[in-house]
Amino acid sequence: MKIVISYKENSYQVELPKEKEAHLYGLKIGDKLDGSFIGAAGYSLKISGGSDKDGFPMKADLSGGSRKSILLSKGVGFPKGKKGERVRKSVRGNSVSESIAQLNTIVEQAGPTSLDQLFPRKEKKEKEEEKKE
Image (cartoon, rainbow, N blue to C red; front, top):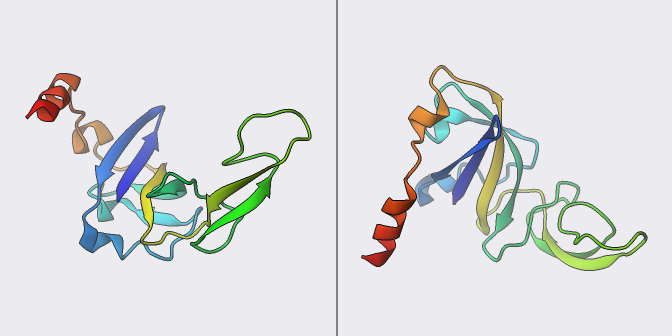
């Protein structure tokens, strides 16, 4: 599972090992998460959303962890359309489950060290070389 941390117009991505994923199951959008769990000691994170392995977004007002097809008129998962238009779309519930591939978080309280030091960015040239090999 990937954890995306948003802080001051920057985002940082962390890959969470399979054995630690089970500790997140059952948490919902809006719940707080301790940053030391993912290697950011001193940080307090709030779950703001995510998506499942097939790319369907999590919706905060849909309870449970299953995927459902609902009628949307605005909000998460709704494509921009004409006024009054409604569309039936598949979205995921607000609970974290084993089918979640990405979890989005927001920093509630900053820690002593900066996120740039904890999660250094990779250069694009390094990524391109890794793909060639």
